[in-house]
Amino acid sequence: KNEVEQSPQNLTAQEGEFITINCSYSVGISALHWLQQHPGGGIVSLFMLSSGKKKHGRLIATINIQEKHSSLHITASHPRDSAVYICAVVGDKLIFGTGTRLQVFP
Amino acid sequence: GAVVSQHPSWVICKSGTSVKIECRSLDFQATTMFWYRQFPKQSLMLMATSNEGSKATYEQGVEKDKFLINHASLTLSTLTVTSAHPEDSSFYICSAPYGSGNGEQFFGPGTRLTVL
Image (cartoon, rainbow over all chains, first blue to last red; front, side, top):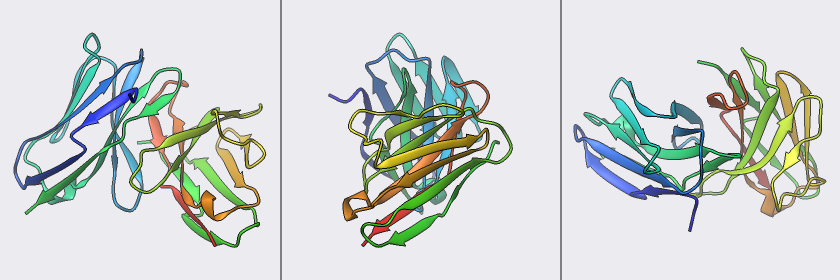
């Protein structure tokens, strides 16, 4: 079993839909990253959080340390949100989830 | 936000040659940088931690002599793939934490290596 699990692996949505991507982990962590990787390969850090909730524009990230679970929400999704979203936890080292491939159709 | 650059963005080389990839933190200093490898449709895998002024720390299964890392300054780390083989073809990405070692990670745009 992977130390960091994401679900779903693939997700398609219509423009405007509310999207949730989940991340569960089994190791002790000090923080968790949500990353976005576009088809060209470049990775953008969306959030780093260690407790509670953070919001940036249409993106919201939450983390529950006791339950070892984090979610990334996208409100009013748009085709430009199409990308792979990766959860990465900061333990002894950075451990990455397998990613969620999101496609948003107009 | 902080910026990390990588050079080159892509490289094609013949089997047996060595390829050097640079990772630079453009507007902040990084005593630690990380090197990752990503195969198609797979997640990133940490290869090694680059430490300024000391030897790199390699993850299990990563050959030190194959993947040479040099952290020459507080803003530059290099990864040299020595005697490259087709199986080394991959996407190589670096990151650097902003602030302390556990600070937010900023990622380079990646280098796509193709070994013929």
